[in-house]
Figure 1: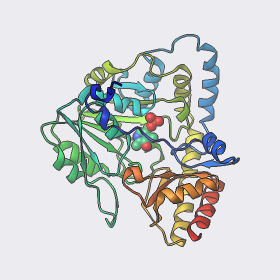
Figure 2: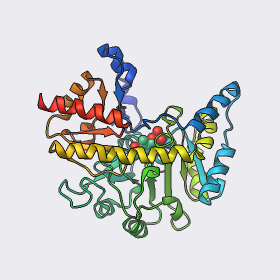
Figure 3: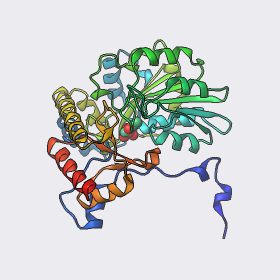
Figure 4: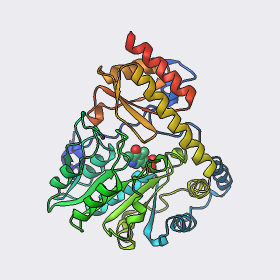
Length: 373
Ligand SMILES: *Cc1c(COP(=O)(O)O)cnc(C)c1O
């Protein structure tokens, strides 16, 4: 038998595939349960944007044709929204597609990417798949006064060397929910060699209400090496359609766009995204529900004597001081899907997405049951 692993491209044998949140169907099939809830993938518990959903429905009748490969209308809408040129936009099948395109454009054997220890699980996967090395910076320590487990920009800068082509920064960060202020992030960008690409991953930015939180889109004119990524998967509630985008200088977008698969964004997704951008009512309602849910979860964690990482995203990562994988299993048996984060190097934590008030309540009751057992 041929051992094909001897013939793979650089990096492939070092990869472990991404482990997604467990789908509801799968749990119900496996355990014969019904009425289970999923708080595992930071999806919007209020459902899809109603305007987005209607638009996707209308677009379905046209799917015998290929979608508009240029994404003309959505790019025009986004360009208008952010005061950019359409050539500064790149659409992806989710923002992870855009992040992968950046990796494939700039990373290769011999180069490296820098990112923080507790950050998005796709950064090491895309880096390794491109044959490049991961340089993982220490994060702030668990007892840090304001951002425990958060990005330590000094530690990240210290890892940048002549072989560094890309730095990945998630703001707010997943799985910690921590964030970087405008002043510190801008200073980091100023100090970085101009040829190093910075991917500023803003998947959760629409949830944020903090005043000194940066908007990467405002900095594109200042930093030609900056790529800002956003998604319709989180607050817009369109995760199942797979659509996100990147914003950067036109020169960078031209390069990155060369590795894009043709028709990478499907027709219902394009239509839904365009409509969802205007769904202010839904966005406001989502932000409010999330803010209330964060308070609801934190209050009960406090009452239970649990430490959690202060989050401004739509999820909280809580320290159970027990085997997180086991607690995860026991929650599954009670019909509640959360996210174990051992793969993020946090074996005693779990990450829970902020749900509706009733979902949060159900999760908290199940957690209390499991922890006293
Ligand atoms: C969810 C998430 C994304 C985006 O996912 P897509 O569905 O591919 O848009 C990107 N970065 C982070 C940090 C995320 O948590």
